[in-house]
Amino acid sequence: MFLSLEGIDGSGKSTQATRLADTLRAAGHDVVQTREPGGAPGAEEIRRLLVEGDPERWSPETETLLFNAARRDHLERTIRPALEAGKIVITDRFADSTRVYQGATRGDLRGFADAIHKAAIGVEPDLTLILDMDPAAALTRGLARSSGEDRFEEFGLPFQQALRAGFLSLADEFPARCHIIDAGRDADAIAADIRALVLDRLT
Image (tube, rainbow, N blue to C red; front, top):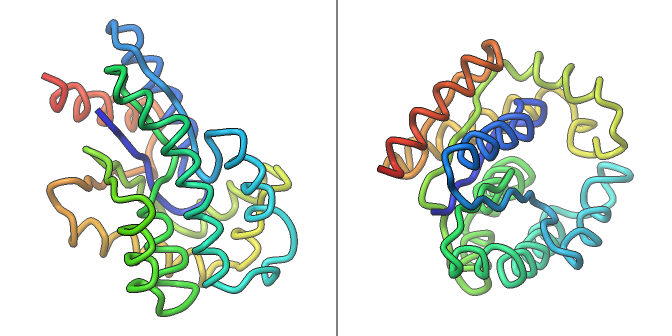
């Protein structure tokens, strides 16, 4: 099973991905937890180009190409081998992030993003959990991390608001795959909802 967690910056995806992986391992499943951009050595090198530095260092078109280059490496070296070995893969972000970040909010590039995805990736998760919360609160949380990987947070609140709208629209577009999770609550409550949803899909 291939699972992705999506949402705006600071919505708690990484925390919940780790909690879900721990839950599934405790239930006896073999789990690979990974992330994008990154998840494989070459993809991690591309990650630094994308998430660090001046917000305007890349055009939306260049970003789309770089994200897909990283994703292809991730798919070849991490995701596909794990799935073929019968493992569960949990990724913090996948192609939906490109559809929203570059396709909807950094330019009218959805067709461009979809065409590259079809040609270079051609894979969708079995289940996508969209962590949804107030953009202002998420942005405050994201900037407070001071991780050095805050290039997209630096686009500001209007950008995060547009991202949220993009992810909610995506959930409407792919209702069988995408499920919205209220991420403005206590982390334990969020984890419980995710656990129930995923375990139901696995049975």
